[in-house]
Image (tube, rainbow, N blue to C red; front, side, top):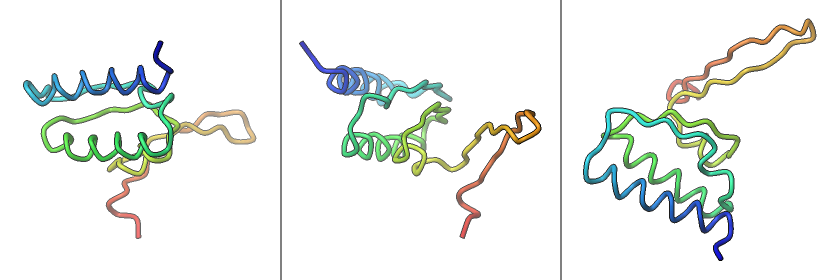
Length: 95
């Protein structure tokens, strides 16, 4: 019996093994890091940085460590008027 974090780590190991052999042009990952603890989320973000030289990643996440690895962040916010707005932030231009 594996915990949720351990299952995620096994899945991530298999995923990164596959893309190291045959890197796709882009990869969409949805909440793949949700069950990871802080240290493993940091390791995951380091792998994302390394593999992003070959593959473009689109990652849906709430994990701070994963967001820190991003070049561009997109988010949705709702103002007081109830209208949703898309926000984008290019991190390489932020000082």
